[in-house]
Figure (spheres, rainbow, N blue to C red):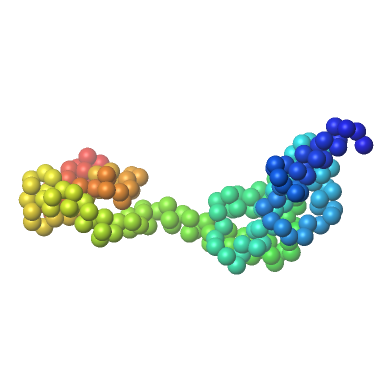
Length: 188
């Protein structure tokens, strides 16, 4: 074995200082043929495919837990399109793959819902933050200084990316709030 090859094998096995083996995310039984294939590929290309193998393995494990992340959904899609080093059909049965695809669809729906306007509008817009806003604004409308019928208004609309944060909120009376929204409606 050449000195360079031994060095490469050492780099492959002991990536992190203090590591006692292959830099891996999990400690499950790794089939010898998978290890040998990954090592051979690493010696040829310098690319470590064990991390991808781990991630594909975790797709099966995560079925009983939380939804998949966007990265996991993307990995599953790449694997289904044969764009990964490892062949997903060699790792899982057709039934398991079908279950992972269904799980990824549910996960994607949940992710998209969390990004949606209706979810973001409600998320974090608590009575406490509304009260904090009114207190900061001394319990009066910032436009006409009325102390009657107060509401909390988003300066930058949530639908346009505004957050439910104190620096994006202002106290208004209901009349001024209505006027602001009628002006915005006229500009559209």
